[in-house]
Image (cartoon, rainbow, N blue to C red):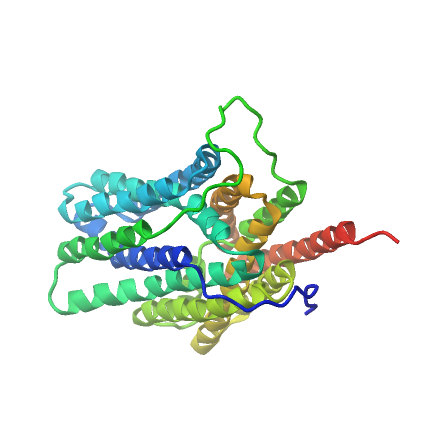
Length: 400
């Protein structure tokens, strides 16, 4: 892999306190979220709802979050401050998650999950803009990598804590109530964040023209959308794993192993994103994704699925920090809220056609056809990203 042009040497500094605080917030918030999320299907069944209602709940909640990511990014740029939105985005779940322990009807679960995702939608883009503003360019990959590592660590610990509490005799509703503790700790962590003032004046009237997002960013976002259509829910991979012999009892362990793989690879991927071409790292991650999808389509034994799941986690490590660091490079500071909002919003919106397409091909043809089609789309997206990167470097190169 070709290294980026050498930067002036300087001693690497530790990550700023604001980045550490935001990483801690994501860690604790994910513990609280993942303590309750695996129990939602059981809770809904106990209230008389079925799998279809669970799909409605999660579909509406994710759609609301995607739309709000767009709005929150624009609002953060408009007012020139991100921290208030981040605080509210972490604070809202603190108020609504414990209510799951009190529900008596399925529609109440729907309302609580939507409000929980409202918090996610409001905080995501402003939080990424805060991280981007807290570090220089050559440290942004490490900052985003550390943040995503802590996020995945929370995803590992949350279900384990919930399982432990259930094993000790706690009821489902008591576990849902206990999720308030890490959620409150996330809010406390955000309070330690210090937001630097924006370089551009804040609070300009809405009718004044706002700085436009660069054309290079818009092209990158279009390529990201193509890959996002290929990247359907990981639930399909769990379904495929069960088809090739992984027992139902082992699926939660496989899911935990995937989070561990993501946690380790994301930390390493953040450092790689500061040393090598970010676009090429993302393209490599997409190719790893394609190989894993092809492998899952061809798998015939349980150990194939286990091995591929561990490799599949590496694609996350190569992509997540590099994607966010690249957006930081492409978008001027005054537009970063919108840039991250569009990124998260578009990727979230593409999850709908991705899931529908994968499900339709799986049902009408076969799992192998569906997974192979997604792999082909990922390869096309990787090639398009490499061409985009080459075009960007050609335009930046000096003319003789």
